[in-house]
Length: 108
Image (cartoon, rainbow, N blue to C red):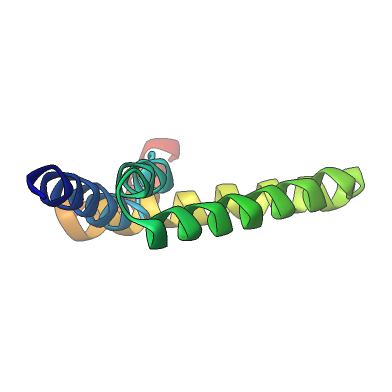
């Protein structure tokens, strides 16, 4: 019972930490999946959820692999744009620095 509680606390902490990290650049989803993997060692519901998530990620990856080069480039550009927006908003809100304005100042 003690092991089950410890696994539950560690796994939940990893999942929550990963979910907090998701909007920022970095391994947010990797930490979420690691937390689910830890929870799956003791809880059947976590094992089913981890299996479901793996299947969805695999299906999305396989779909993208079947697309032509234009769709892949657009998907990559959108991903890069989202990551850039997240970095810009994060730096602006936490440090009060507008990276776009700083770039304009450096270029002029």
